[in-house]
Amino acid sequence: QVHLVETGGGLVQAGGSLRLSCAASGSIFSINAMGWYRQAPGKQRESVAVITSGGTTNYADSVKGRFTISRDNAKNTVYLQMNSLKPEDTAVYYCNVAWSPYESAYLEAWGQGTLVTVSS
Image (cartoon, rainbow, N blue to C red; front, side, top):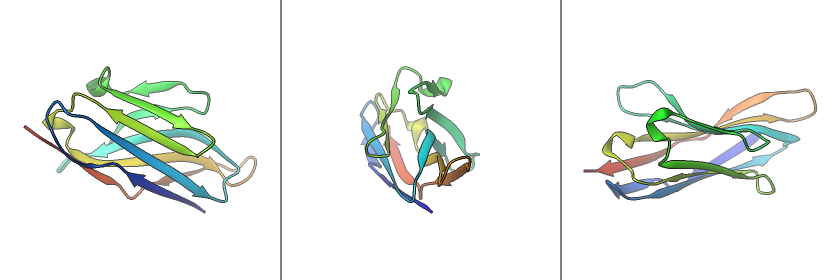
């Protein structure tokens, strides 16, 4: 089993910044891709940013140039630095981790979600 703990959400004014963290713990053999998703009220969950084990990143068009995803492999932690926040960034943000409990096994885990509210 893997346990994901997300921190860093909150209320911020438009134009402000927040940094989300997601730490994975448990019986982990390896962690592959790590990512952030978000779900706004009445909308489907969408991918925000993903980072592979090799450090390749991919962003949703709506956050390119404003958000930066990074990871600390030694700490099994992924971060999302969010700058120039807009009211439309308001959502519950979820961490997603692709991990292996042992070689050749591949699983996926989700964090509990952290609320980001951007006021105008």
